Each structure stands twice: as C-alpha cells, then as structure tokens.
Length: 220
Image 1 (cartoon, helix red, strand yellow):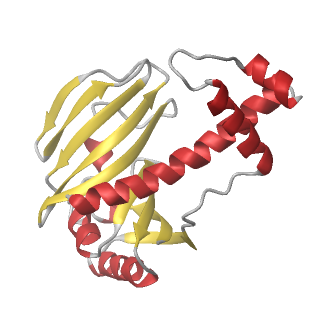
Image 2: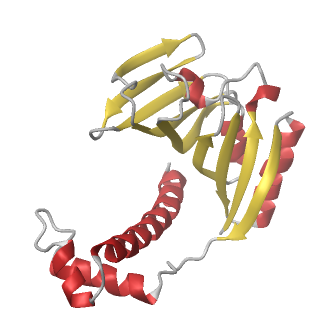
C-alpha cells in the first residue's frame, strides 16, 4: 500500500464546505480536530467521522444543523469527542471512493488549509485521485509519498518495554503492575520508560488505525 500526504486549500472551491465548517465552534489552537474516516452519500455529498480533543471547554454535545449539512457530537472521554458530519456540498468524497483510495486523516491547519493523509493500493490510484482533484479545480501541494510497511518498526528497547508491560499486566483493567515496578526490572528511569512506551503505543495505534480503517471501508 502507498501513502500520500497533501496540503489541500479549500478556499479555491468556495461553493463547497470542509467538514469542520459544520462544527459549532471555530478551529482554535486548544481544539484539535482530525477527520478519521470519510465516505460518499451521492455525487456531491459525503459524511465523515471526526475526532476532537478539547482543552479549553468549548465543545458541547448535541446536534447542530446548517443549510448544507449537520453534525452530531458525542462525548467519548473527559476532553474527547466524536462528531459525525453530513456534508451536502463535497465532491471530494466521491473522488476518493471512485479512485479506490481512503482518507485516513484530515487535520485543519487553518480555516481553509487541511493536511490530508491518503492511502491507496498503488501509486496509480493515488495519482488518479490527485489528477481528478486538479481537474475539478482543487488546489493542493503534495508533501510526501511513501510505502506503508506492513510491519511495525519498534526499536529493541521499545519492544522490550512494551512486551514486559503487557506480560506484567500494565495494560490490564485494573492494572496489575506500575511503571515503577517495570523500571526496576529494566534498570531505567520512569521518564525513560514512559517515553519508550508512548513511542511504541503511537506506532502500534497508527499502524492499526491505517490498516483497520482501510479494511472496514472496503466492507462498506
């Protein structure tokens, strides 16, 4: 599988709306927004699932309706929310689906600039999508294209720390061990162990998110 990162400028298509347009608050520095999945409804409409992290208390649960779409926001944690957005003015959802590609992340940088991470089965599929986007009048810059490794590349120390934490029940509910106990066995500081585990977790979660999301969308 191949991955492509682009910086998309939605300002050039003023008759369309990015999905975060339907959220009942502005994109602020203390609110992190990420589109996690996207699919089409018809030729000009789509819907998306968005993850929101709110560090300033501006996000509220509920349904919010605008003329060209709506969003439903639910809480999934103390500062975490999920939003399901129905966007009645989005050709991009159709282009993504027809090109056999998947949108695995879309992070607003400003009100109009959005960083997209796209996954496709080949360079040809991703090239076809970008070509069709340009034909439709979308402006974007390609930032990176790379192969997705099917293996998770953890360092030896990350593997050791993660496996020991798993085996001792650090990830059980409730936990059966502590960071201090694992540190004593590995002979490292608590801060070092915390960094190793967080790095390992991020790589594992990112790998799972990309591949499981692609598999799920294929079934739809």
